[in-house]
Length: 159
Image 1 (tube, one colour):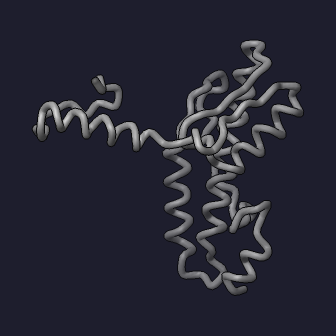
Image 2 (cartoon, rainbow, N blue to C red):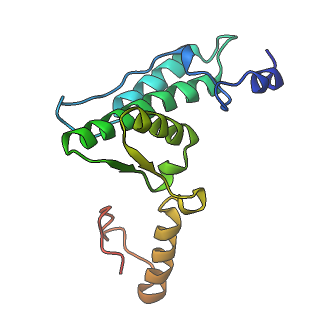
């Protein structure tokens, strides 16, 4: 199958099909709302390393299967939390909220569970990279370069 043919047979509006492999879902503790994707990433790496020389290997399919696993966990745990706390609304934000498949599944599953789903317009779904770069620019203007011993903790004060 040529790349052009793959694009014509894409799985709902995406270039790959998640059907190639069902990657693991990490549910952690049954009552936990935490997410962990390290095992998933390792599974993807192992799958790619074991299959990349096969004639039928498709990175698009691997990406779709990875996305399917992540979306499944994010949506399922979010809806479980909404149910536990008797919430009627669900919203997503940040860079991940720009993912079309995540939006579609949230919309569908919220409707099935009589929940109202909110998602910002795509133009407001930016990653924090721009914010961090902007903060870094101001920090550089005020303090100059940083030492290798300076704090890089993810919750460092930005101002």
